[in-house]
Amino acid sequence: MRLRPLRGKSLQTAQNSQFIEFPDLNLSPIALSIGPFDLRWYSLAYLAGIFIGYWYLLKLLKQPGAPMARRHSDDLVFYAALGIILGGRLGYVLFYNLGEYLQNPIEIFKLWDGGMSFHGGVIGTSLGLMYLARKEKLNWLRIHDYVACCVPFGLFFGRLANFVNQELWGAPTQVPWGVRFVEMTQVGPILGPPRHPSQLYEAALEGLVLFAILAWMFWRTQARYEPGKLVGAFIFFYGLFRFAIEFIREPDQQLIGFTNATGLHMGQWLSLPMILGGLYLMLTAKRRRVRVEPIAGTASVA
Image 1 (tube, rainbow, N blue to C red):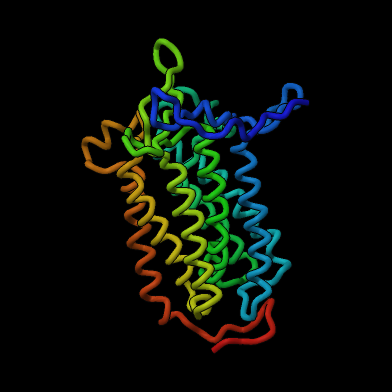
Image 2 (cartoon, rainbow, N blue to C red):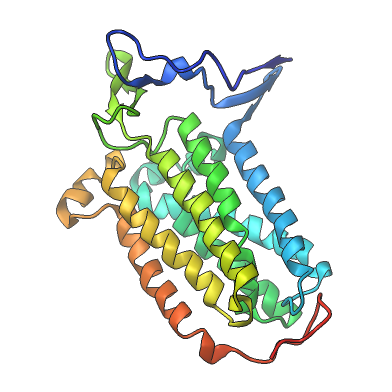
């Protein structure tokens, strides 16, 4: 068994370069190798997001007026994880690279190589949650509220994995923290121009900042008793952050023509409905407020 180190030598700026060179970080997409089996950071990111999100969900369900009981949580995580994986992958295939996958359909199943769409994952997860709510006769919108509070964990770890994989990088830049990623060319791998580490920007905004916003709304306001307010805030702020970051993110190579023709990246077009839908859910949440009978907690809330 051999371990792939996550940390290497400390960051240095070479005399001939003021920028961070990715090889100096000594990061590998593979976290652990055992014989022919490779465990990738990308896979660990998904597992960390699911398990930590599950732990946080149980913490939320202990509060008065929860929309479901502890016994529902295992099924919820199963359907949510299934929705993330299937929806995320199919979303990437349909929205970002349909032509290539039609030519090589077997590539669709190679999840370990990356290629997931968050927007597709949202759709898949939502369908899974609505199925569970209908099956168990639960309030589907309030379930979405609670799950939305847990999603930033997965976004945070997922964006870190994107950075380690050297994918979804930013546009060229001259800022001192610009990163020179290894890029493949016809003559082989080379160090490309310094780029915005947009994956880390997204980890901070979509992970840390979004979690802080939702945590404040859940614990410090009455938002959890207004169905749709928390999930509305989640999709609104995610859409807003993603729309902004896309301006300094390199468009997918196969979609450069689309970006030039429309003036916006695919991610921005997909984020616009999230911004509008999230705003609607937040603004109309108060009218959906009803007396919440406790399922996991000990008191009802008017």
